[in-house]
Image (tube, rainbow, N blue to C red; front, side):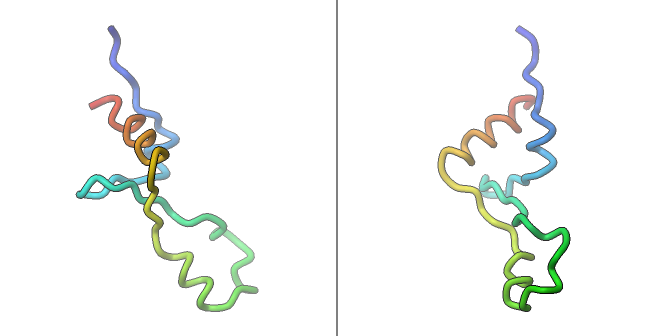
Length: 66
C-alpha cells in the first residue's frame, strides 16, 4: 500500500499546536481594513481554534504522511 500524502493546501493554512489543537487565521484581513474600527481590526489579528469534526478531519489530512 502506498504512503498517504499530506494535503498541502490544508497544511499551509492551519497549524497544529503543541497540545494538539488546530489553529487558523481569521478571514477577511487582506484589504479594505482602513474603514473598520480598531476593535474589529485587533480582533482579526488573533488566531482562531478549529473545533469539532472539522478539526478531526484536518488533523487526519495533515498527519496522513506521518
